[in-house]
Amino acid sequence: MMPQKVALITGSGKQRIGWHVAHALGLIGYHLCIHYRTSALEAKQSAELLNNAGIEATIFQADLALESDVERMFHEIKAKFGRLDVLVNCASIWERKDILELSSNDVTRHFEANVLATFLPSRLAGLMMIAQSEGGNIITIGDWAQDRPYLGYSAYFATKGAIPALTRSLAVELGSRNPKVRVNCILPGPVMLPLDLPLQERQEAINATLVRSEGSPKDISRAVLFLVQSEFVTGIELPVDGGRTIWANGR
Image (cartoon, rainbow, N blue to C red; front, side, top):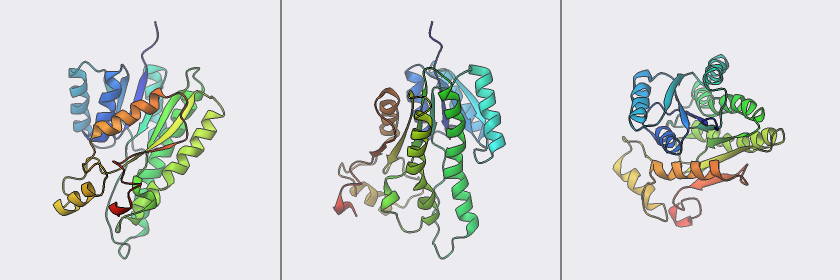
């Protein structure tokens, strides 16, 4: 009997995009590793929701910007399951701050949360996967607006813009060691916009898509499933943005 496959989804303790991605992977039979940094109660509740739906889920804690924390988490995952088949990097921060007020601390915080917190788990997952005959899949999350950034998000875009380059580098580094290890990047558009986003800005974001709607977490989940199941796809950036990237009138 084939052992059950295992997926780690960072930032999935809260019921945002990461949780929905986890749910989608659980529905096709993966045992889920639900990651959280500080939201222990929410992570426990999220795992219970999945368990109640008949999906196996275990919670793991780590500060993804601390190498020792990430190493400990991966040691726990390997000790419990002996394998890791999918990593989806959903943990990140997205903060607005005028460049006139931006400090080096702001940039460092974004770098740690968006770049380091993607690199460290991806590297350790990759080392596990290249040692597995079945390989594995790593998915990173960028942002469609990396080439057309909004005002007020310099630290965010400087760090999110590094994700596609990191993805390609990991795809080459890991794939050259085990051709069954694939690494891809998803570039979401307006999906699960912040609840505190002013109504006018929300409507502008929706109007700037060709499909005239806000994306749902299911759109990202479907993209994850496509990449996990597509054995001839690696090193790509996949926009899931309702046509936002290509439409000049969207500004």
